Image (cartoon, rainbow, N blue to C red):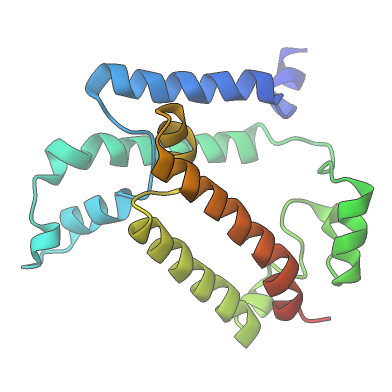
Length: 189
């Protein structure tokens, strides 16, 4: 019974408060903000010897905790996605399945449809545009917006910050635009 509980997706009313408690705990323990976008800067400061002023700071004092946090996210993702994998198919509404099928995407096989996530697709021009272009836009957006979706959506909204509300609305609008405009252009039929 307990193994089955670990393998099922947890409901929002359990995970939401847990994530909120993590964000609150980070603030209480060391006045740290919940977010992951600053990790690239900390990693570059730690690994790349450079004369750039942007990377000359005490990354151990400022960002080591954040690098440990993101390592925990990766380990937790492995534990949850591999060791405690949900044996049941992904639950997607019939309307979403029909919309994806109209684009030639059949998500019934899992979280990563083969029409989008294979080496053949990745190494195509469309795949490179999606992966490299999307990665650049996410990185640029996080830097320009002063944080990532988790930082603004969890910490910023929790602190009732107007810039975070604007950022979260922008994230949702961009996601909807990408789903309805870009995805049909990039998916080969």
